[in-house]
Image 1 (cartoon, rainbow, N blue to C red):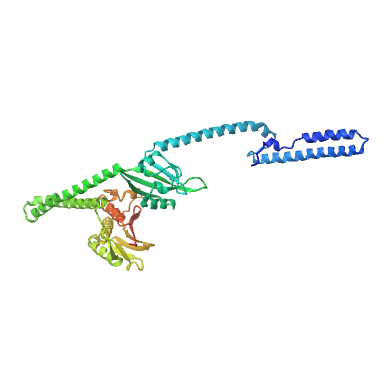
Image 2: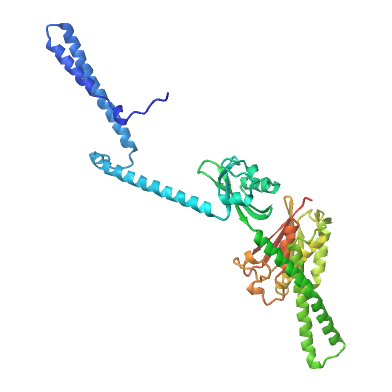
Length: 441
């Protein structure tokens, strides 16, 4: 049985034993005729004195220990006069804090229960620590979401398990999960559950079924519209060229005819880019991977854009890390050529005349990095997050012809090839676009 804790007052020595010994000892000393009684009397008086001395010493030590843990500066007699008031104030604050915590806990529970987004918290043992009704509704009855349920009982798909493993390793992840008839956007973030205890993972679930359906409809419409518009645009261009080459218009009309031809060419370029981007976004673009020798391939890309560079007196230079020229990369050569062609043409188009455009290559572990560096006007930091969006163009470059789709195509192609594209730039200091591709097949 565990030893019970007594009240603090019971730890103080009782003076009653000393009083009792003193009375008995005095009574015995009163009988002076008996030597034995005198000895016993003196022993009792000495015991009473010792007991009082020990009790006083013990009480002082106890009071000293109590005072040492009281966080106040003044520890004189006023402390005991003010202690009841201070204690009452502490009790009042404690009650208010408990009530505040209760209200905040109730508010959190109410918010969690009424969220349309699903929320699941997994602890370090990969078990459910917290969840809401929306999570169960979104994941369906096939997922068992109760306190203490294992991770695999909630998320059974291999993609979910691999991404959650990344989150437990400290890296956030986002992916789409198909649970018929729903499509869910899942996000996982590493979190600290309790200070100094363990970590966990917060998983949020959003139903994007309607958004995905609308996006599919939009992409199909764009793809069909761009395809249908190509035929009349081509017919207009051919007819205008025939009129111009056959001298079938008066001289005053030739200028207007050339404007028509240039406008139709820009329209055709825009329709081609829209059609290309739509095919990539809808998954209609299939890669055809093949081994390419990196050095020779990049030389061919530079040669293909050399005429545009010469027209604007731009110097094209390249520098590959030692050994990279002989590296074999397995990817779709046509799509990689298209991606680099877009980046190089952008760099040439936005650089001033007689500037230099560099193509740099380096190996980064199991990745290869290809960077295009220009000396253009640069891109403000506030715009860099939007530069890969469809039709977005920086205000500094809107006077330069273009469709605003080239970098969007670059981003989607990089993702399609298992790589990533990044930008480093500042105003007035040019821009560096870096493509990272995996070396492994």
